[in-house]
Amino acid sequence: MTGDITIDATVFKGSVEIKASYPEFAIIDAGFDEPFRKQLVEKYEALAETQTNRDCILSITAKVAGSQVVKGIFELYKVVRARSGILICANYPPDYVRALTDLGLPSLPGFELCGSVEEARIKMERLRSAPEG
Image (cartoon, rainbow, N blue to C red; front, side, top):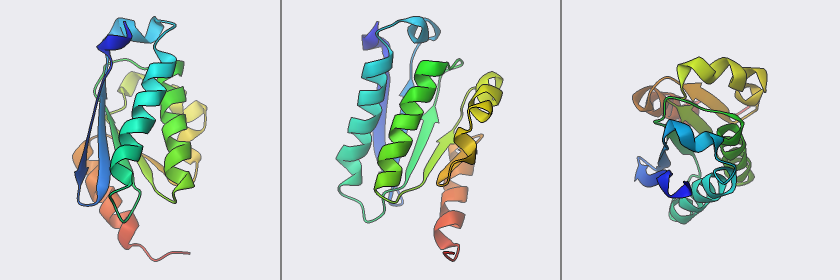
C-alpha cells in the first residue's frame, strides 16, 4: 500500500512546497509510517539545498489524517527547524485539526497551520518580512 503515497515537491518564491496525498485506507496500513516520513524529508532536503532560505509549505491533500501523518509532519518539522526554516502546513484535513492542536504541534516555534496553500504563501511572506526578535 505504500505505493499509494504521492509526494511532489517544487519551489515557489524561495520556499520548498510539498504536496502529500494518500488514499484514506493508507493511514491504517502499518507500512505507511516510515515511507511517508522518509519521502517528506527526502523531497524537502533535495530542494532545500538549492534555496537561500529553508522554509517549507506542506500541503496535505487527503481527507483524513492520523498519528502516522502527524509523525511525518513532526519529522519534517525537525529537519526544517534544524536548518532554521519555517514549516507551514496547509490543507490539513479539518476534521483532524483538533487532534493536531491537542498534540501541540501548532504551538511549536516555526510551525504554522493554514487552511490553503495560498493562505500559507501569504503568511510565509509576512513571516519572512517581520523583524526578528
